[in-house]
Figure 1 (cartoon, one colour):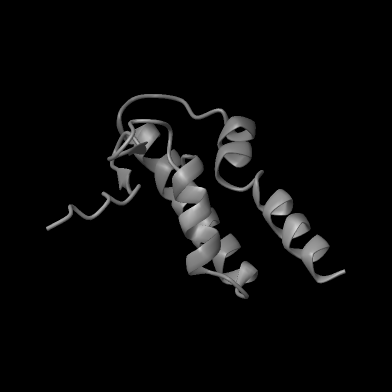
Figure 2 (cartoon, one colour):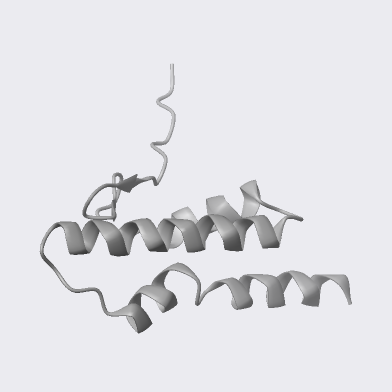
Length: 91
């Protein structure tokens, strides 16, 4: 019996990947999200924006201060690259 790969899910309140300990969404999580939300990029953007807000709230709850530009890049900044590569496949 082969072991199933562990999913790259966020560990709250630190918002690190449970599998690789990288800031979530890590590279593998991004790929999984693109596959899970294929054809539904607006829903993915809403999910990630909601996750970003929760991460900011968790950071403040832990006594930290969120750098909103960094958080935006981490949670949403990669979306345009994912959409651009898919658009290139169509042409």
